[in-house]
Image 1 (cartoon, rainbow, N blue to C red):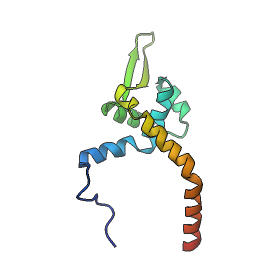
Image 2: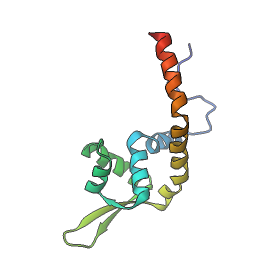
Image 3: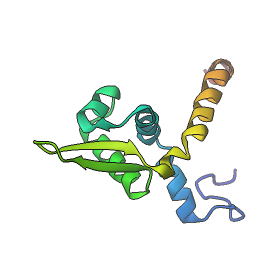
Image 4: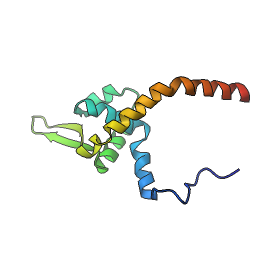
Length: 124
């Protein structure tokens, strides 16, 4: 059986591009981008909007998205100072792709469930 952990050598993506794709498509990044596409939010508002995420995971995700230019961290001049997160212009270019991925998931989930049941029945 061929090893599946190595990317194919003829891949059109470099190692760095694959790393970026992994970072953008990970579980929390998609949720954060989806949520921030609706409107800018402060950290605790974002955390309440995604209740399953831990503070540590949300912090790491926001930093990674900010580093990759997908999210902007804006310090407001109010007293006390507040930090707001919003989707950056580069991140907005992902909105149609993320929406398409969510649409595909909703449309195809019943077929995935059938496949899972067939697999589970065959391996039980």
